[in-house]
Length: 273
Image 1 (tube, rainbow, N blue to C red):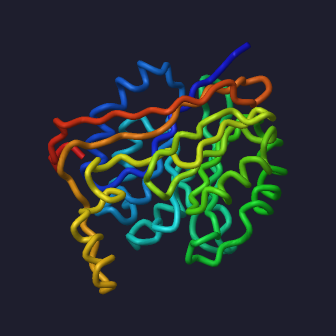
Image 2 (cartoon, rainbow, N blue to C red):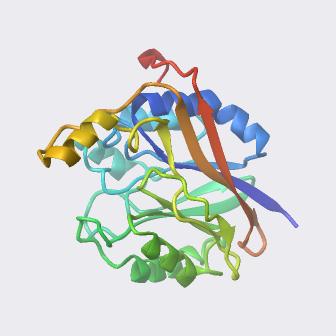
Image 3 (tube, helix red, strand yellow):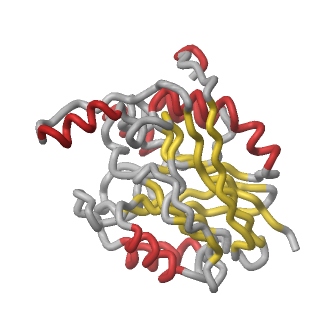
């Protein structure tokens, strides 16, 4: 029974997140015997958005597919790249006609792997299409191509994330949550064979608030006055994600394991990222 192992890394925050990822990816791939890497890069530039340069950085550093979410549009220069690249995804349930695609395929050890990016609606500001019905529609096409299907569900509410996972249980290999930047401890393989976790976490400053300087966020809570968030680049830095093993014949997950590294020796060096 052939199996593939996929590393799915949570929201990479700013330059410090990119440096942390670059420092550890080779060792992680070796330790977990990883065949494919999927990274959420929507916060990888100044903590909000992604650029073509960041896309090249990830592709140069072992990434097979880059997913995103509601901040994918923050750096406007990414629009042409979204239209050009098939390995940079925006949520598939945005209205038709927006740039880019929410479905991507890559070859992994001779097997075709599909990655779907979806965005939630509960407590989210964007008026996107229903992720449940969008998934149904997308899967009619994707399942004709491959039975190995990984979903990054960029959503706020754990109930919505869990609901989608149960709804798709047995039809996809994995549903992993992103967006909240806080790694949850509910990873498991659901009864139908779909790996699930509510949120895979982030790559960013451990003693921040979701990668942002905590003093700024606390001030916002105290005053309710809008503030400009700034990425916290002070170590220690945390890298979070999951490793998922999938049976290539059935497309069902056989295991899911949390990945977490805390590193106090990461230095912000723009020349390396």
